[in-house]
Image (cartoon, rainbow, N blue to C red; front, side):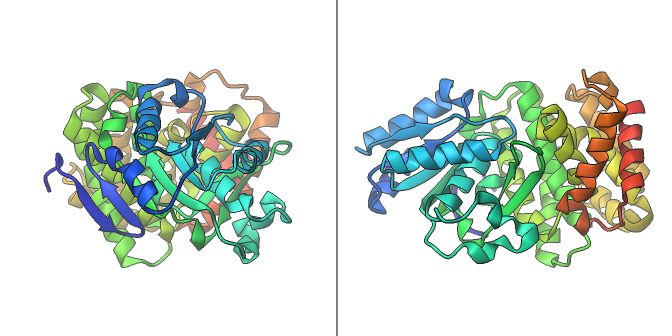
Length: 387
């Protein structure tokens, strides 16, 4: 594959991939009859060149562009409500999710809720079969990633927290798949090293957890293995040298991770989500710290799978312990803290209990290859703090 080229492919939705493809966005929307798109992004990105580039591309196509950026780093329901109100008041006819996971989550949740005024947002909770309430048409929806991590651009779900309890809800509907994804590595060139590393390790976690998930999907397994290989092949160069080919490979690895985890995730994500909820921790950072502990926990059930990862990615070693060591070394090289104790956290007994309870409530561990109970979560958090 020529990583400097441009490509179109369908899996699971239409993806336009390659440096410079963002220049095609305005023309595409205009050809689809769109007149007034709403860009949903985060407040930090709105001040950076990628936002300006996308906005200009839309204006050049004579589109009436609005933008909404009043969202939290870890989105809550009230963010979505404000976004829905703005979408309706501005009389927009399309939604563009621009940015990383938070932007994509809010954009997709706005699309979900905008044409369902009689429902509460959390009626669509996937844990309760909420997709049965999705009976109206979803607004025209496209995504433009500016990070290489969550892969939310190709997803059909969104994660939103309750403002009061801070519990994360996963909202899902097959119709939330974007009409088209514009994955342009050029939009990631200016990412600072920490964001590149943290989001990249999020992509790695997606691919590894998907591969060992107890779900059955040989196609997802193949995608996950190649995604893992791409991360190990390119994340260091993307982070430390901002190499353009490495950036492109990481963009693809993120897309692949989100495609693969349709099979399911696992204990690492159930550990990471509460860290974001309780401490407002970056999701990728939380995954990066917890990933070695999740692998060690699953070693008794998934040793053969971890060996396959090492073999396919051409990494040294032949055991889960070797994979844990490699990931710890990668984290260190990228400047990721080795333990939770390296961060400024209120590690009170009350917060530890809250973390474990929220982790147990999280649906991701239901697909973990090894059953996880409350005491297991407590021990895993303790190990992550003391390691």
